[in-house]
Image (tube, one colour):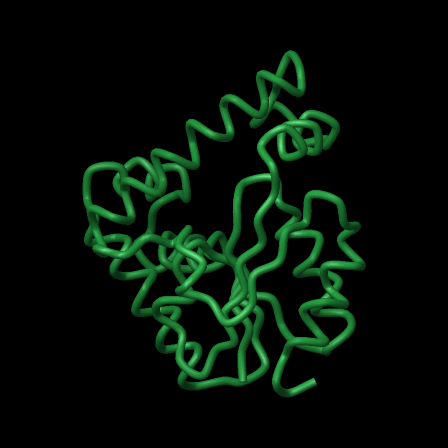
Amino acid sequence: MHISITGNLGSGKSSITKILSESLGFEIYSTGKIQRKIASDMGITTLELNRRMMTDPSLDFVIDREVEKISEERDHIIFDSRMAWHFAKNVFRVFISVEPAEAGRRVFLAERGDVECYGSPEEAAELLEERGKLERERFLDIYKVDYADPSNYDFVVDSTNMTPEEVAAAIIEAFPEK
């Protein structure tokens, strides 16, 4: 069985995924990893792939098929992805929520290099909410499903007042194959 981790921006998905991987011995497979493989297979950079994905939803479908294929061929994978819950087979679907102000604080304090720079936690919260809204609309348009709808998941946890270790422990407790 697999685990898919989806959630709000700034909810701690990456940190929680690493803890789960160490605790359960599962491999992590992120959409970013899949994107890098597809870009390599296509002979282009990941930046070029991302540019193409903005105007060509068929590239999303390539990633979706890769998630489905990997989930059928292997076991014990944690998918860190917005949409893997929808495509992976034999998966325990987890959604991690967080209040916008806390998400902004976390991302503002995190060292993310030049890729994500914010002047304040409030600015980070505002921009994360805007990005999340755009992603949600994009996926609603492409897939006709709302990745932020809690009814799509087997387990939903609010990480606002929890450490990543506490969230990971709650997920492990809820996981049917613990």
